[in-house]
Length: 107
Image 1 (cartoon, one colour):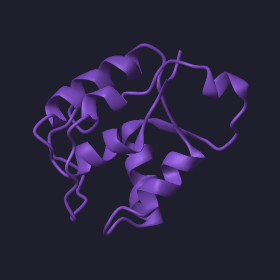
Image 2 (cartoon, rainbow, N blue to C red; image 1 turned 90 degrees about the vertical axis):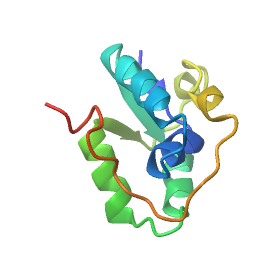
Image 3 (tube, rainbow, N blue to C red; image 1 turned 60 degrees about the horizontal axis):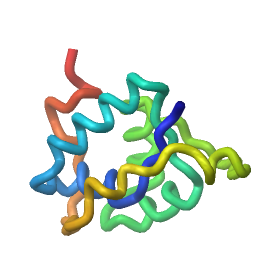
Image 4 (cartoon, one colour; image 1 turned 180 degrees about the vertical axis):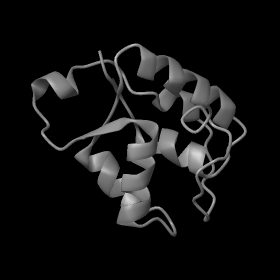
């Protein structure tokens, strides 16, 4: 089953939150258990992240293997819970950057 991502989870990675490594670990596990998916609302919210561009968000999704799903049927809304619980105390920085040495870029 795919795991749906919440905006706060991705922003936590981009801003280097203290819980970023924990988020990476959970995302790596979820990717191995069926993959990661991002819905249209999350994609649009990420475009509002300071300094983020459409190209940046799409590149991030390609490099991390996140499937962009713009079809929001009932199965999407009733699927596995998002990883929002990981980011209960997130603080967003203003400079997005793909973290180096993360699971999606490691060999």
